[in-house]
Length: 432
Ligand SMILES: CC(=O)N[C@H]1[C@@H](OP(=O)(O)OP(=O)(O)OC[C@H]2O[C@@H](n3ccc(=O)[nH]c3=O)[C@H](O)[C@@H]2O)O[C@H](CO)[C@@H](O)[C@@H]1O
Ligand SMILES: C=C(OP(=O)(O)O)C(=O)O
Image (cartoon, rainbow, N blue to C red; front, side):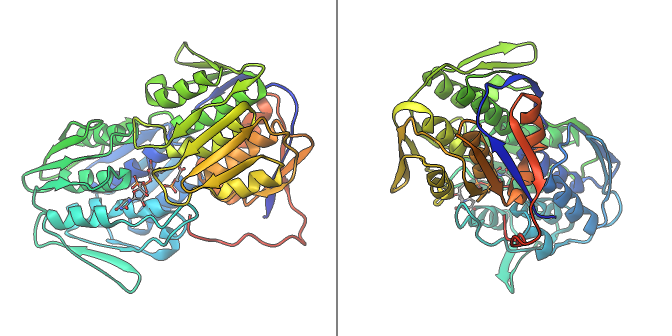
């Protein structure tokens, strides 16, 4: 069914929202669950997202048994698995490539469709493949597939990553967990989701130290077993609701939000005049009457996260003065700028930066979610625009947000998700 979200700008948002388990933590954790040759894994706080359905389909296709009950997912991968992930899944979700490391480590073979480019850039996976090769795998790319093979176990290796890639770090940590000997990954990504994955793997019997720092050391073991694990809260979902409070001058309690994971976002919001205080197991966020301008540069963790760039741009549109936002992680993550312009936003792209002349007098318009965070950012702008904003291409938003419209409505937003008339063009399926 083709749907759209209609949001009408107006009041301040008030109330509380529970933060879901993190999309970017649960995807590698479910991928990692297929390494276990014994026992089941029981995963808690698994968000009901389209991407979670996709990764579950990928591993079910390989013969893993996946059971979902509310926010708990049980994975039994103890039976022999197929070692291939076809294009029909990888085109829906690039994170499907995270099964490469576990399959290669457990079976010495993996064949995964090559992910294409996507709305935010070309996103190569050379750092993943370079690491597998350093561990002794032979990697070939052809006919739209990546195929990796090794004779016997992978070998522990010293790997220097040219850039602290999140996905490459995850793939290599999973592969190294079952390798013969010690692996040291230098210039590793330090994101909280890497720490969550390492904690889960250690519960499965792995021997990983240093996750969350730039050097991760892994002593390979011969086999891993299923384990019970609770997924960390989603810092990007939390950050998105923080911006909702900021732009509307609202007062929102984010239950289960983890301040430690959100340092950069919190300090930038504070510079803009937003109050953020720890309360209970979460964060209370209070927006000011008038936001102030600020400058932001996206960086690998603990720098400012690229996944919050477009939402912060929405906040800058409401801020007094000139803000500059610079994207250094992805080559092309400004597709939302044109959509904001349709809403009468005053902003321009200069190279890798966007200059925002605030505050803009935002007006509702028909806009397209060009990627999942861009979609969220357009809704945030719609919360403070005059009239109705209609956001289409919701499949992107559904990849990463559980019932975003429903949660905002529960905080007092005038927002609804409706079926679009049949005469409108059907959504096409493209690489995410
Ligand atoms: C499922 C998941 O967790 N997705 C997150 C993950 O994506 P993902 O793991 O794809 O992001 P990476 O950290 O790998 O990519 C960052 C940059 O490095 C480049 N690169 C990456 C790998 C490689 O082999 N070669 C290469 O050139 C990419 O094109 C990109 O420009 O981290 C990103 C950066 O925080 C987030 O925006 C995504 O939400
Ligand atoms: C870019 C994102 O995700 P993915 O890497 O899954 O495309 C995101 O979560 O903002």
